[in-house]
Amino acid sequence: MAFQTVVPIEDIRNLPLPELALRLLKVLANSSAQINPNNTLRGMQQAVGGGQDGAQLMARIADAWAWLQAHALVGPHAMNTLSEWQQVTELGREIADDPSAVTKVWAADRLAGNLDPLLSSARANFGLGDYETASFAAMKAVEVEVRRVAGLSNDLIGVALMRKAFSPKDGVLRDPGAEPGEQQATADLFAGAIGAFKNPASHRTVQFDDPVEAAEAVQLADLLLRMVHRAEQRLA
Image (cartoon, rainbow, N blue to C red; front, side, top):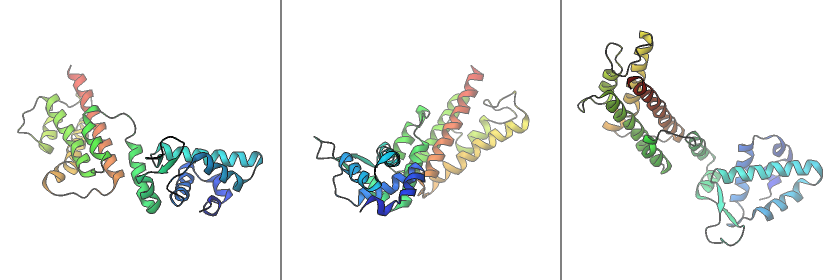
C-alpha cells in the first residue's frame, strides 16, 4: 500500500503527529513482515518529491515513525537482528486492525510518569492488560496506607476506614487548618474513591474494558496517596 494513497500530501503537512503516525502504521502493517526505515523512507521520498517542501514533509514522516517507535508500535525485528530491519509489534498490528485499540496507547501515556512506589503492583497489572486488578490494587494500596498512617485497627476497612481516618470531628488524618467543609469534602473524596473503585471489585466481577478509565483510577490513587503522605508529614 503506497503511503500517498493513504495520506494525501496536505494531511502529511497538517495532521497532528499522533494521527499521522497512525496513518503510517496502517501502511507499515499492510507491507511485508519486515520493514526497513531507510528503504521505506526513501520510497516515500520519491512520492512526496524533492526541494524544501519535500524535505519538510519527510521530516514529518520521520517524526511519525519515531512516534510509533516511542509507543512500541514498531520495533526491532525479532529474528533479523543483525540489520536495521524492524517489524510492526503485536500492539501495533492490533491497532492497525482495530483503530479503537489506540486507547491503550492513550491510557499508557497517562501512567508514563512517576507514580507512588506503592502502586507498583497496580502498574504491573495494568501493563498486563488486567485493568480490574490494577484498579483494585491501586485502591487497596490507598486503604493500607491510610490505615498505617492513621494507626487504625485492621477491623476497619473500606469506606468505614476512610470516614474514621478523615472525620472532620476527630479524624487523625484530617487537616485541622482546613475549613470544616473542606475537611468533609476530603473525607467524602476518600470514601467515594474506595467505594467506587475498590469495594465493587471486592464483592462482584467488574468489567474494566476501558484502559483509559483504569489508568485514571490508578492516577486517582496516586493523588490520594500524595494527600495521605502530606497528612503524615503534619503528624510528624
